[in-house]
Length: 506
Image (cartoon, rainbow, N blue to C red; front, side):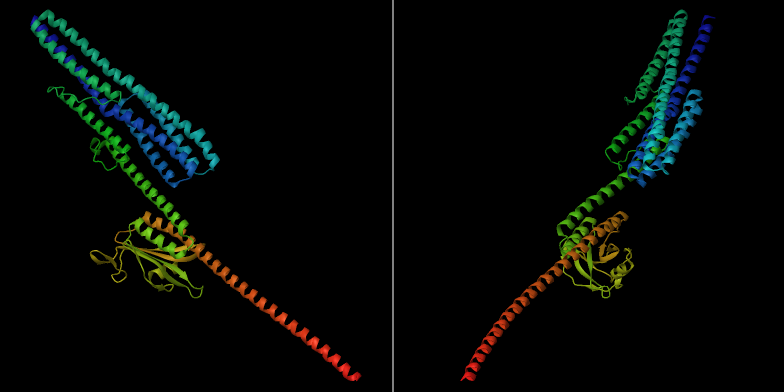
């Protein structure tokens, strides 16, 4: 009877412990599969809202299409976040969280409405919309996400602790019952529940550290029924450690590291992989932009130093451009002659780090260079005829892989043509760079030619003035000689008249 009662009580206690343990497991699984992703999406939404505001401000200042496109991208991400938050909240069946999620969606719609309004107003109205519509919505959404995070911690993690307290109460009841019935049975139950409590406390400490944003050490495998919980916690730790390493790597600008977060699957794994790819693309564009800006500054310096001589300027620009873009050779033609007899004269050629002394004159329409001159448009070829051009290298003669020809145009006048050849393709950003350099070079060549013509006109004017001064001096001398001759004749006439008067008087 006593043992039957003890067995019955034991079964009840064990069943109760199992029920509480099941609730703990369910609570933990809820924490790892719903609460943590929910918190992550809240943080991500808050971050994306701040990014939206920042890029709208950038769009206000620069009117950049890139900022406008990024705003559209972030807006889509925010809408996805709200949808995921709603799904997680529906799973939790929490009215408070649902109401806050709906409020968060309203604030997001206010941000979208403000962003939409910015596209059709002036600069001053944009600033007013940002300050009075967009920023209040961003601040309200930040406040809502903070409140939801606090609520999640207080309700769900506190509930997890209350389950542990209930489990401890069951342990105490079991200990009292077993002490009355059977010391041995008490010992077994006590040891069993003590072990369970110890494991749950370890889990509580582990999860508590995770809730604080820390990454504790992995749990040792207890090799019992709680192993799957420990393994799940350890897997979560491993994935969060990957998130940490991923963040550090991305912060250093390393977008090529082989760091897999959540095996690049699931909401968080896909989101982080997508973020890395987006940041990688943005970084690549920044590098291209910096490369182009540094190059333009370099060539503006070359133009400033050699702008007085069009041929020296042509060589310096060509040689440095071939090196800067990694081409193999290039040529620069300048227009000669009048409108009815225009020719394209090769004034600079460069290949394999050496200046080439070549003479070449083309007529408009002759070859690709002449065609580019007439059409006033660039030409880009990737299939080069074998007999078009030969690039001599240390391995022998080889046909280039691509050719880029750019007319030099300033004030709607073609000043010349730039021809580049390379074993590699000319990437779009390299083509744009060549076009920008060509605009500056065309203006510099035009200025140099005008200065040269002005110097020639000045020299001719000086020569003509000197000739006029010489003629004037010669005329003055002739005039003086003529005047002296006239005076001499006048004197002789007077003498003859006097002699005639003397003869007549005699």
